[in-house]
Structure formats: C-alpha cells, structure tokens
Image (cartoon, rainbow, N blue to C red; front, side, top):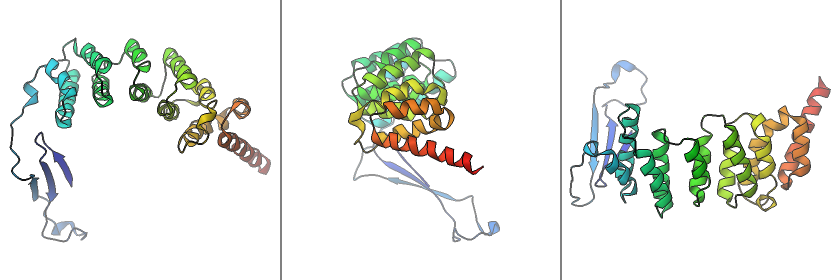
Length: 256
C-alpha cells in the first residue's frame, strides 16, 4: 500500500492483510483490523537513531544541504510545522535565502527554495531576487510557486513579461507557459507576446504545445488579441492553431 525509507536507506512497506480474496465485495467477509509492516534492509545495514525534532531552526536549515535526501525532507517538514505554529525563529527565511544564493548545486538551491515557500518566506522582495537568480531551475520554480495562487501582482506580472522576452532558458519559458494556465486569461496577453516571439522554440518537442495551452482560452475570450497573437507569433504551430480555433467559433455561430 505504501513505501517509506528511513535515514539509513532501509525501506518500510505497509500492507493490509486479509485471508479472504481482496476482490470479494461482501464487506462482512473482510477483516480490516489486520495489517503487516515489512522492513527491507540491505545486507547488514547499521541502524541509527535520529530525532530531528530536537534540532534547532538553524540546524534544520543546514540539513537542506545534507547529502541524504531524508534529512532534507524531514527538516523541511519540521520547519513548516513550526511556521504553522508560529514557533519559527525570525532568521530562518534569511538563512534559506542565503542558502539559495550561495549553494553551488541546483538540488540544494531548490531544497532551500521549497522550504522557503512552505514556511511562507517568499515575500515580494525575495520573489524579485529569486526570479533574477543565475540558476535557471531557481527562476523556473519561483515562477511556478508565485503562480500557485492563480493571481499575479503587477510587479510579478511585469517580471514575468520581461522574462518571457529576455530569459535565455527554455526551461524557464516552459514554466512561464505552465504558470499562465493558472491565471486569468486577461493577465496573459503581454507574457504570451513575449513567449510566442521565440522562433527558436518552434521545433522544440514541448514548448509549442505548452504555449498553445496557455493561448487557447485567450483566443476564445479575446478575438482581437488573438488576431494580434496570430500576426506576431514566430511559431507556425501556434499560428495554425489560433486560425483553426477562430474558424471553429465562426462555424459554430453560423450554424446557430
């Protein structure tokens, strides 16, 4: 039913056990009080006892750079729980921002960024800095996290527009296209203009379709803007799809 690994790399499996065949539908024949827990250990793996709940906030932040993913995830969860309870020290957000900026590996940067997000530490100033980070994965994930609410502030929308035009990373552009699908179509126009101007994305396996998924509602709701996108897009597939979508609406009206 579920698998979970511990700090030593051992794997725990939980399984519901019943002597009856599971596909039988008669509820009275099943004994749902029984279960089994299995532990899978490689050779003579040593068992260590770890209780990160006793660690300080500062120590939990440092665990985001730990080579063992279990420590990083557990530390992140504990920091989130402390933040919800209002028991988080004030310097945690700053320490995490520093970890994002100073770490060499993208994995550690992202761990710190995700932790910053779950404790509610990405304010406007932090968001602006993260969107300008030199690591494309940090920029991309910041785009995704900022779009989770389904609304963009004016400053963030402007940054997204600038990134759509100027960011050299296809990864960032893909995350921008994905983020647009979460926000109202009225907020998409300027960002779409920037994305659709990248002729180099025309042969990409994913980007043209991602751009179309963000564009389609705009075509349906704002035909004048759709015409502008049709004439300015540097991606043939998008021009084809916009024309087809607009033609479908015209045929539907004519049929009525």
